[in-house]
Length: 94
Image (cartoon, rainbow, N blue to C red):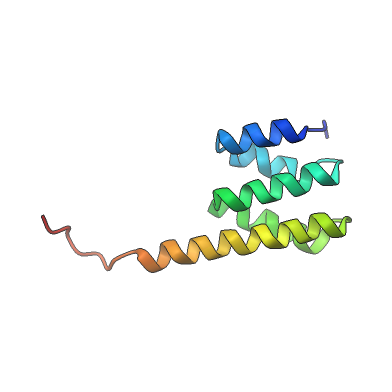
């Protein structure tokens, strides 16, 4: 895979390019993978959950696995918050 740079990862995060960040989880550079994982954690997109889950178990780098585990917790926690704030389906009152 073509290597991304940290700057490219930051740009993807700023652009909310979840798919690009998920692809960067497979980068050759463990720092790029870690940065991509943490960026996905800050975006907390449902699509990132499974790739982060896999990375935290399988990445060859301990620091990248740790970054993925942290990001995974952020994503799951954010999704639980969103779920908790969803009101029962009642029409909005004006």
